[in-house]
Image (cartoon, rainbow, N blue to C red; front, side, top):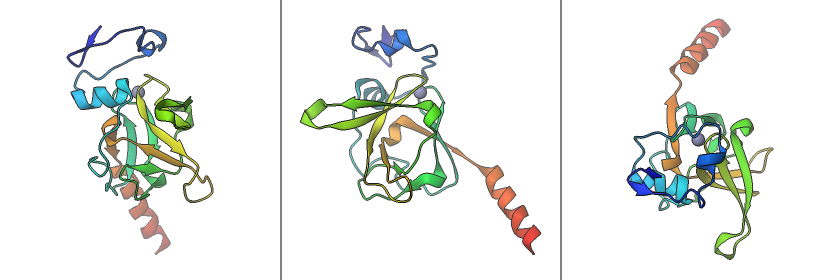
Amino acid sequence: MVFCGRVYNLEKFPFFMKKKKPATNPKLSSQQCHVLYEKGTEAPFTGKWLYNKEKGNYRCASCGAELFSSDTKFDSGSGWPSFSDANKKNIELKDDHSYGMQRIEVLCKNCGGHLGHLFDDGPGPTKKRYCINSVSLDFEKKEKVRKELKKDEKRKK
Ligand SMILES: [Zn+2]
């Protein structure tokens, strides 16, 4: 199967077959494909969403599934966008023993794309840190949220 200009071995990437909705975005860059489907990692402090403080939703760059909310985003200092919580119905967690480390891999449940890893050193009540590659995410700004907030402020006055 050729995807993103690369030849993929379907045995190595079974999610193309298994997932009901691969719904892969044909506009993905080769870096996005590398991270999402070859479990790559973007260089720290290079991702475009790292310092994004706008309100909105982070979606899977490949299939558009809603994954994280800006409400749970925090600056972990790790160099990757970090979230203390996730939209669990669209997230799959898997034990990852690669590189001699014991980590938990975070995947998009919908398309099987690799997003990043989950650690137990996060802030707040969840104590979770979803350490996610920017290239695996699309951001959807929430204008609506802002308008509603303004309305609330007016009401309070
Ligand atoms: Zn996806």
